[in-house]
Image (cartoon, rainbow, N blue to C red; front, side, top):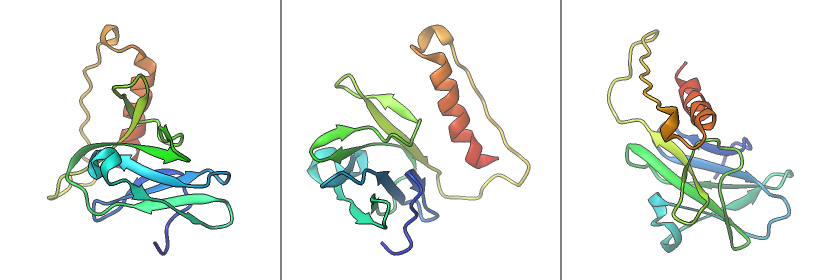
Length: 141
C-alpha cells in the first residue's frame, strides 16, 4: 500500500475504503477483522511499514453505513486503541466503529445539522457516548 499514512486508527478514504494503522512495533503479526471481512473468516493482513513499527492494511470500498472491527495482534483480539468510537461486542469487550457516508451530494458548505437525543439513564457511560459523538462530528466541521 503505497502512501499509507502512519496516523493511528481508522481513516475513511475518498473511495469509501478504510485504512487501518496500528502502532505495535513489538507485534509479530497483525490482522483487521470486522463485519466487512466476515470477522474471522477473511481478516485483512496488516503489513509492517516504516521505522516506527506501524502495521497498515486497507479494505476495498465498503457499503455505506456503520462498520465494526477489531485488530488481531499475535492471536489476541483488541479494539483499536486510537479510535474512541466503539460498541459493546457479544463477549464483554468492545468493537471499534466507523461509518461510511452514502453516495450523493454532500450538504452545502456551512450547512451542518446534528440531532442528538441522548437519555443518560439508558447509557451506561453517558460522557463516553457524548465524546464518541463529538469525535464523529469533528470531520464534518
